[in-house]
Image (cartoon, rainbow, N blue to C red; front, top):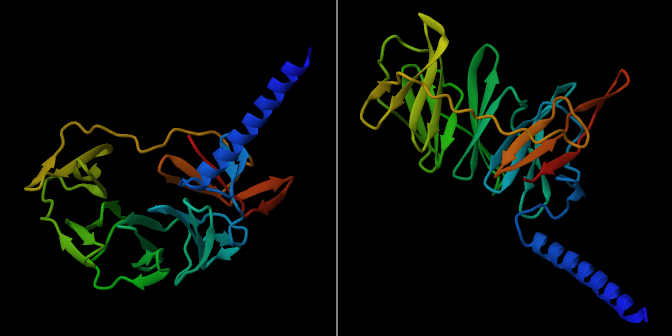
Length: 278
């Protein structure tokens, strides 16, 4: 009399296993990492082809995450790309050694790197991960600031101008000068679908953030700056807490690489990587 109940139990077990198998097939056909090991909402990725390090520079470019440089005593001159579709890492050679004190943005599938050099003007490089090609950017406008990117264009400040770099045309174009008074100090540019905005502080209001917005015809000083927070919602600690780790947001997912932990007084570097999915 127990046979029907046993048969149903076996059927349920087989259905569960079949569902898991189908899930694996669907996962391998999506842009989720296929080499991940599940840990709650965190998944440990395949080990990157990099030595253990801290303070690497990360940037999301298309369906790839780039991890560049970092520290292992000295500043390192290599990196790796992680393909979100295939779950595969690829080692990169780099023309310069960088850390997270440098800055990179992505435009039109290309990474644009601003490499700070103490006592000299910053060097600019572009990297196309599709063909593993680094190229030095020449004929730069003077005193370029940290950049912002939108679509196929990179935006930076050069003296009184916002200058726009077209990745496709390999050319810088200045917008009309922002001559609004009082002039802003500590300026940063942000490009978004709602417009190009320069933020900074006036000498008579050193603690009040002001903004000048370009409407396509002229600059406007915004009387009430609405501060839109760019911070992401915390997702909780990684399965192994890290100091100096690299964190890159990629389409709602968070990729974390490297960093250091402490075993008593001993500092231990790692080259492990994790991804968090919502």
